Length: 550
Image (tube, rainbow, N blue to C red):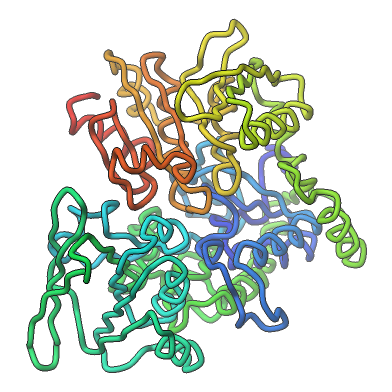
């Protein structure tokens, strides 16, 4: 075995605040550490537009805070991989991880996989998901501009998101099932004083109903008096329901391996170690009384210190010492460089800290691609063309051609093969925000070899014998959209009968209206079947099978 090439001291599954902190601590201690993240680095906090309670930082956004954390970790030598961990073997000194980009080995593993919004299960929730029921204010708030909203929940997330939604909604009614909020008085006072927000304590939703327009009626109950009432918008039209009722931990990967509590959260000891030696957990995936960035980073720091000891013992017992990359900069150099990078990259598509990762992807691409930019000559088209030219300037694997067009949904970039045939992949808009990584994965999948695919899924994908048009409507601020985008693009790259076109829905209101989209991601199959929510490749194939299409 080649230690330097095949093994890490630690692999961190998940790139949120907990994982980033652990990476920083381990890399600074000169251990070889890899962060594997299937979505965009930063986790759930990236959708929080304002963070004001992180010590030492007066005010910032979740995205900016975690971007700084990543730079800190990288500057000490931490490595990052955009991939999904699909299987684990956690027995013994050397842990085995299977990912969509190959196999990994490590002495210690940190599970920092976070959590997803909890669904309540009231009648109408599934029926109107994406057409009135939503779970992310940042992703979906704009769809409800001028409408009334019900916001369900009494914790910090519900309060913070309700305040955020006031910039769009005409009126907000909060349903809190207890007799008080369960968050800091400062934000409670702000919510209660806001002229657009009305709070109903001891209230729960019973059902939601409506018609083709969306939700037009919601039944509520006072859980103290038992009295029921029906909510309708003042104008008689549709309204939205935002659910912020906690989170479900992402523990499916290890549910039959490590010890969990009744809610599915991972149980750990004081050092964040799970029931399996050498396997740790941190952040929202753990049992904990408070889920905040500050507790996540504390978990990550505790876990990292314990993981250092596991790695050090493994060096002695196995004789294997992973080769650690050189740290990029000292702390003072890092601070100065961050200022320079921020100044140099103002208004550019690709920041300096992305280049190394992009080069790694380009080096693995087997064939060249043509980025065909279709525009109508407007400003957004010019922005897309400049972005693609900036990307292509990094490698000889990409070439950009510009084509004037008058077809709908412009601007658009189509991924063409060297022979000018269409790969089936296209993006309508400028693939920034959370869709940047999925766009790069699209290039990798189109050029080959692409992300690894389970044999059963590969067989199903290649067995599809009729043309499929997959349209994915996304918001660039949505953390859940990239999963579905990547799945559809991978499917299209495996079968020439399938195309996958992605749309920044905020640029194309006609599509939003046509498919009654009030939440993202939205999948439209053959311009007929509409579904909402994230899906991986297996789940996408199962959905297509349910339609009789796969």
